Image 1 (cartoon, one colour):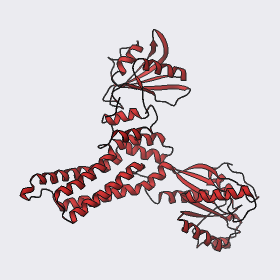
Image 2 (cartoon, rainbow, N blue to C red):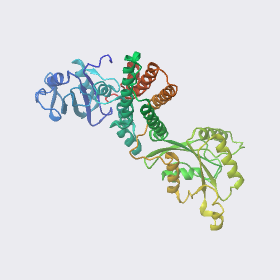
Image 3 (cartoon, helix red, strand yellow):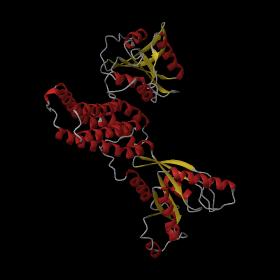
Image 4 (cartoon, helix red, strand yellow):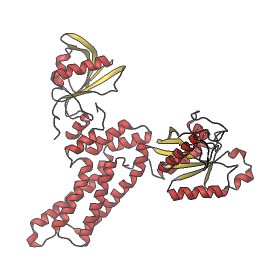
Length: 456
């Protein structure tokens, strides 16, 4: 059990700095006794839970601030303990003064994530749900918010619970067989268990597959816009952002360094990188460094937009670029710019190429380009009610669950003794328990909750 988790703790739950109000959260057995001393307007020990109370907070008969107290009695609170939230005026000085008074009366300042840690320790949520709280706070798009909410409500945990329950049931029957080993009896139906394992394996595989989309939702998609000088890369960036972010010029090599901006498309965050124009030979040292950085950005991009001037490019250059992208294993999108300069006949000659046709300067077909980027990112995955994994720790544990299931199936195929089969099942249950926190240790909890903000 975590040291000091029975202490009463307090922290600022709103961002530090000056604002209209600040909220100080207090949790623990001494919440009511201590704050009751500071709030003479009412006896907080007598008021019902989930109520608001207006009055003055005082210390030695001196008014500190006029506040609103929100009362939550355990276990019906976020942490499962007695909780009081103090809404005070947003002065940094007032907030610190209240915290100083609380600490002088034996209340400890909370560690990062300690309120949510207590919610976990008190059974208000499992570990996967607790991690979803951090994801929800960090969410910056509709898709990331929706995914975090779904996992906070137990979507991921519920997906694993049935597998774990059935495996626990079978494990108990195997253990029972061991007690009657001298009588050569089987209580556990191996055929039914094998079918359970196949179903479990499919569920785990589906969850692991979802991480690809989950990583996109959580971290966004890095898109490198590459092409020859004067292809219109900076104009395209400005068109996608609908603002003049990059300098546009007819002079080749204007962009000397990479420019990075963010764009939200259908709830997915795209990190756009406008790179220096790529040409093999340049006498300009600064431009050469820019080209080198462009190549580096291209290597690490999730998607590469290869932008070209359709009026000057040749089919040989297109084939050469495609060959380079395939060799590098890059996911690429061919985008033909300046299509307003083409005749209908010239336009038709490109029909055999998988190309998105745009005019960046006129803003033509920019929405079609955005849709293509979105579809390449989600790869036909549904952003609906499916459970989506966004946490690398969960992926590591699920990979181990998958390995354990394979070992159990191999054991069944080879008719291994019940005691060895029981060991493999326990190992699988251990990794399932690591995800939800049924099995955990203090070091793991310290690491997970240290990434939370103080006050949550």
